[in-house]
Length: 303
Image 1: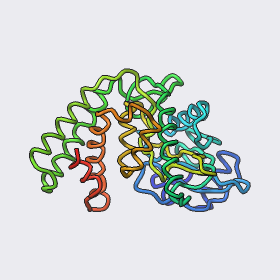
Image 2: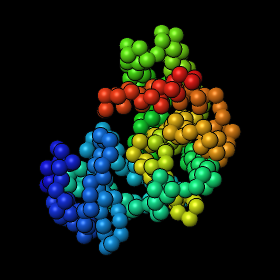
Image 3: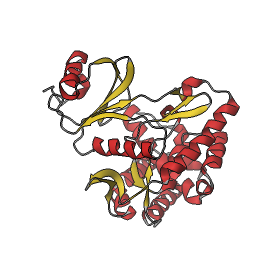
């Protein structure tokens, strides 16, 4: 078995052999995908000249199997996501949940260098696709798990989910206040928004992407050819997912995205979710890079 306590140190040749032993595929590892600290490790590889991604989950508290099942459901609904080639919960050689996923067709949106009009059209299409993703309804709320062969959220209700995150929310508010980045009045306003979100009732949860921005959108021939990275997906309020996409967009992009999504994108609660999302991103950025995300701070100030 490969040493699994620190999978970031897998040697390419050792991983290639392990994939052969566990999955039966001859692979050639190209490189380890460089991303922010994550619970999983992603490798770009080739199988018979075709680019694939090998995902190894290091955190036993997370379920790569749920992500894989989510991909299958999305494919069945016609959402342009890469197909899962193979998945093993307990591969003998690797020792950790591992999936091999096809690569998306086209190129990432930033690499396409689209003219302004075409880029705006892509954002409109992205809104349409996100709405279709949200039409997938799930039981439960929060982080995705598999129960009795079905994909569902970990918590029984939105209230339970937000209560589980309450301490992180208050820590983020206290952090901004202690750094004198927000006033006492602003801190009180944010706490009020957090309480309002905790008390929301909106019916059955939707499948949420939770990290949908241009780096996770592939384009080809002026159309969206792929949506990737569902590692953070959950069951929840679609307005939260809309807000998560909007925080990454400029004013013009937001208008086209909301046009594509439709009426719900203009719900006042979307802006409140944006405030909370910006709050958590500021704290996360500071922990990782010891710097303040001015863009996210500005979002908090706007609301």
